[in-house]
Amino acid sequence: MAVAAPGQLNLDESPSFGSRSVDCFEKLEQIGEGTYGQVFMAKETETKEIVALKKIRMDNEREGFPITAIREIKILKKLHHQNVINLKEIVTSPGPERDEQGKQIEGNKYKGSIYMVFEYMDHDLTGLSDRPGMRFTIAQIKCYMKQLLLGLHYCHINQVLHRDIKGSNLLIDNHGILKLADFGLARSFSYDHNAHLTNRVITLWYRPPELLLGSTQYGPAVDMWSVGCIFAELLYGKPILPGKNEPEQLTKIFELCGTPDELNWPGVTKMPWYNNFKPSRPIKRRVKEVFKHFDRNALDLLERMLTLDPSQRISAKDALDAEYFWTDPRPAEPHTLPKYESSHEFQTKKKRQQQRQAEEAAKRQKIQHPQPHTRLPPIQQSGQPYSQIRTGQPMNNPHPSMAPGPSHHYAKPRGPGGPNRFPLGGSQGGGYPNRGGQGGGYGSGPYPQQGRGPPPYGGGMGGTGGPRGGSGVGGPSYQQAGPYGASGTGRGPNNYQQGGSRNQQQYGSWQ
Ligand SMILES: Nc1ncnc2c1ncn2[C@@H]1O[C@H](COP(=O)(O)OP(=O)(O)OP(=O)(O)O)[C@@H](O)[C@H]1O
Image 1 (cartoon, rainbow, N blue to C red):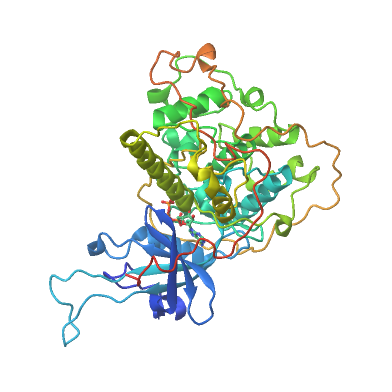
Image 2 (image 1 turned 90 degrees about the vertical axis):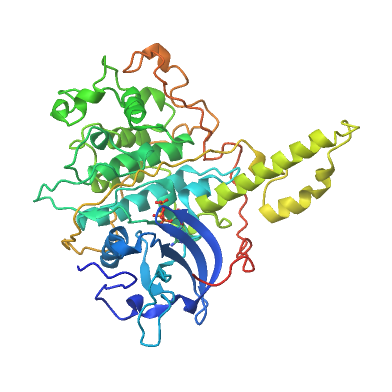
């Protein structure tokens, strides 16, 4: 595909792509802020349909339309599956000022914008999990995991690697449907050609060891590692491998999954960066020990997802066949899941930030005007019922965002992409065939209390010794509070207040 000239979109596709103006939509609320632009909730003025508009950042318009956006659009236009986000169309906002002859006025930078129009999804998994008191049931986790694997299996058989699987890219609607989103780092791959791909992809906490060891020839297994991290996170209640940088990420992986060697990962010693990160002494695998409270089938599946050697890592298809999904409790039917008020990572972060600012302001005020009768009940108690109604929080947590909340800070190690080609492989659509009638026989097993237990390694890593011999080289820190119900007991309230948080006044026209 030719690269479009600045400000022009050349997608040589159906007329609806790029032909309509963004003015056909009314901007409602910002719901996301990504590396490549903002995401807004909007309403189609004629049909009243609610959609999500992702504004494509044109910071450097001299280079034309961003290659990442072109790749995302190309890939999304070919993927059609219930568990993959649907790109409906592309719309544009007015372009640069022109003179009478229609020539662009010199020195006047291109001011127009391009938006991708998506079906609107009520939540992303991170935002949903961050809700105070949120607690997923096992059947719910199985339901989300199954849909994630179905969507990913579909991508992989169509020769697309997602390369950025993480909670905020898994969108969920109020019918319980989960969809893979953000294909900004996705690319096509071929089993026949061993093309070299960048290894600077996938958000650090979800990045597999082969990429951290410098591999440039990889396949669908990279996504399956990320799926394993999400799976463990859902069951455990917080991210399991929150490295601060690449060496620390590898250290954390080795401490959990053991050190790689020629026996458990043939060829690992030949990996480009193996010698840079070579463990000083072997560490044994501890997945079973660390997650011993997980259900047996969950643990078996997790072991196969978090396998160091990518060639032995379970595929999405085989994962769907795992006992875990065929034993009781079975995956919930999506439509039976509770409905929640809309929650996106961007919004939950913003709420926490506002809460922090309010707390700081209150503290400052207190210092300036100390309260004379500190034993009097705090004034805001009278306001509790109101905040409770508005936020839907239980009485025992009137100020939910003051609760020790999660501190999700996803690194965004976006890398440059490879060449832009999309060999349309199989066009198999639809779901994964049902495996009927498999008897259960396994109990659900103990379910760990979400967000309440100690970090996976219980601070005990010093005893076992990390690859650096625990010698104070900035050892891993597991202080992060968990996103999955750090503060709560029981499942969150089920009050879907349609439009409750929309604020139409706040947003002006499109730009
Ligand atoms: N179709 C949608 N419906 C509702 N919310 C959406 C939709 N698409 C994106 N979002 C929200 O916007 C956020 C950012 O979107 P997206 O990941 O596509 O952008 P990005 O610029 O690639 O972000 P990042 O840099 O975090 O990967 C998502 O996490 C989600 O909360």
